[in-house]
Image 1 (cartoon, helix red, strand yellow):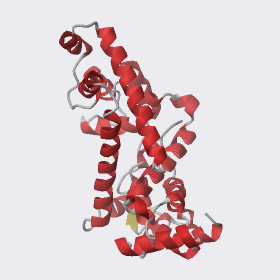
Image 2 (spheres, rainbow, N blue to C red; image 1 turned 30 degrees about the vertical axis):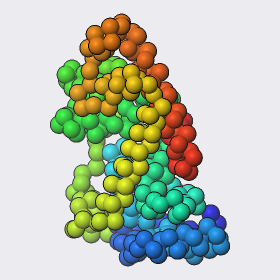
Image 3 (cartoon, rainbow, N blue to C red; image 1 turned 135 degrees about the vertical axis):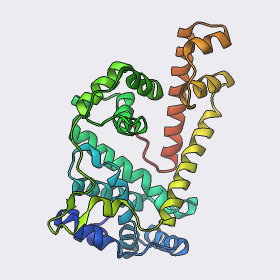
Image 4 (tube, rainbow, N blue to C red; image 1 turned 180 degrees about the vertical axis):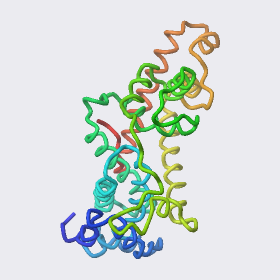
Amino acid sequence: MANKTASRAIALSPEQGLSRYLTEIRKFPMLAKDEEFTLARRWLKDDDSAAAEKMVTSHLRLVAKIAMGYRGYGLPMAEVISEGNVGLMQSVKKFDPEKGFRLATYAMWWIRASIQEYILRSWSLVKLGTTAAQKKLFFNLRRMKGEIKALDNAQLKPDQVTHIATKLNVPEKDVISMNGRMSGSDASLNAPMGAEGDMEWMDWLADEEPNQAEEFAETQEFGARMELLQEAMADLSEREQHILTERRLTDEPKTLEQLSEIYNVSRERIRQIEVRAFEKLQKAMQKMAKDQGLPTGEA
């Protein structure tokens, strides 16, 4: 996208003062569906940079909201938001309104991918590990600890380690190691933002009223992900579908022992089927996401 297309977004750079930036981006109105469609067509067909700029600026609040979800990684929030803005501009560049999705739904994939890539670069892949399982653990550990009410900076209890390892299907030693690497103090939600000190983190995180456009986008994105999953699952055999579902897609996964008794095979055979099915599912979903112009999450 040409530099002038994003000139307004750059002019509102978070580095100039996060408090002021968050206040300023609230002034851009959300786009109605018909207006968004018209702007996207103008950008796609006529290379209209003004249309692209309007789509970018109208979604800067969405980037900030998503970026706040990554505030626990010890990185400057202004930089996290800036990386999210890069993802937003990439999504506008590739957005095709004819496919039926709203821009917010499509942009969420790119914003999160851009932020996560930045976080991984900042934390160093050498430090964190490069496997898909380790990346999954990295981005889900804080959420899992919150669900089980584990103190963020404390060592996990053995039963908590087992619970998280089972849920994320990773070795317990990886959970312990990653928790140690990620230990660190988070900023208080009541800490003042920016030099002015006239806002707190909580002021931004707690919306005064529900934003229906963002709620709809999140619901639609979840639906899109589920649709990809269901289509990819259709390529698996009935046995592969059942084993993968029971092992990874339920709130209370079955053990290898339980499934081995159902199918009258060894636990190792169940594990092999699970791994093979997951690899097939992953490849199918990445291919479908790529076909739709979405980030695939491949390293």
